[in-house]
Structure formats: C-alpha cells, structure tokens
Length: 234
Image 1 (tube, one colour):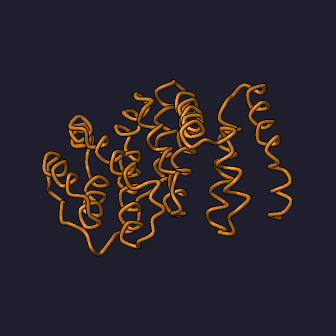
Image 2 (cartoon, rainbow, N blue to C red):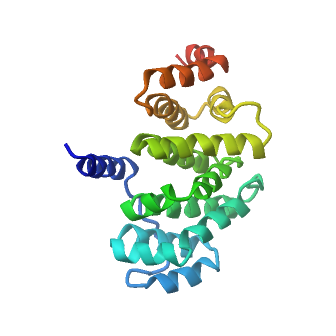
C-alpha cells in the first residue's frame, strides 16, 4: 500500500469514527450559504447560527471547506470556544452555545481539508485543548475525542496532541501533561465520558510505532496512579 493510500484509508476510518452529530431542530437554514455568509454569522454567536453552520459544514464539499478555512472560519470558532471556556458555564444557554460551537469544530475536522489544515498549524490544536478548561462534560468529551483522533490519524497529529496537552498543563497550572486526563478519570462517574477518556489514553500510548516511545508514555500514566484508578473502575 502506498503512503497516499494509507493516509486516505486512515482518513476514511477517522471520518467514520467522528461521524456527523444528530440534527438540531433549532438551526439556521444555511444549506446553500456561501462561506462568506457563514463567516458573518460566526460574528453573531448563537445556538441557532452554530447549529445551522454545523449542518452546512457536514454537507460541504472540499472547495467550500477550503474557502471557509481561508476566510478564518476555524479561527473564529476556536476564538469563540476560548471565550466560552473557563466561565464555569453557570447558565444552560452558555453550555448549549459551547456545545454547538465545539460541534462545528468537530465538523471541520471531519473533512480531510479541515483536518490537514489543523495539522498545519500547531496553534489550532493548542487552542482546542484549552476548551478542556470547563465544567461542561459534553464539551470535554468531544475535545478528548478529537485529540484521540489526531493521535490515531498520523505521527504529526500525535505530536500535536501531546504538544497541546503540554500547553494546557502550562496555561492551567497542571503538574503533568496527562494530569487533566487522569484527574477526569478519577473524578467522573459518567460512563460514556470515562470510556472516551480511556480511549484517549489508548490512542496516546498506541499512537507511536516505536515500542520505547509507547513504553515511556505508558510509564507516565502509571506514574499518575492510572492503574489504581483502573482497579477502582472495575
């Protein structure tokens, strides 16, 4: 199999893993909207606009997606997500806004053009990781799923995901880069979320082909008492 064919197969598997989100009945009708209109709507954040945009992103072709990215669509989404993160999400309206925003980022990453665009810029994955600074479990679940997908997709994606966790550690004053994952595992009783966290651990450890690199990553998790947590989860 050629390198190109291998990348195409990985992308197809990744697209199936991420999958489209369920339709939202309260969404703007953007089925035929051009990228420029969608960019303008992004400057007026609302659940309705984000839900409509997500549907448009999921149905877009490669050319449309490239235009959306070149007009800073992803930048606006990640900036909005950053503003929403760290608030504690006291209001239901804020929680819904945050969730629909991350769903748009997910839709971008579900396209090959969007995924390659994100992989070309370290800052995007770092911004994505900062969305973990929230009490909204559904948002954190999606962020971890996207980081795990990057780990699986390519060595570059794996490196960017680890760099993003290092960045989160520094910005949010964590002691270790995997502390956020292990702490969430230790504190959560939400079964689907725990499954996502364990999948993220596996994606991080199994991402490198080099056995020594895998062993080192596994040792980092063990050093954070992961085995004790797994015993309790059983």
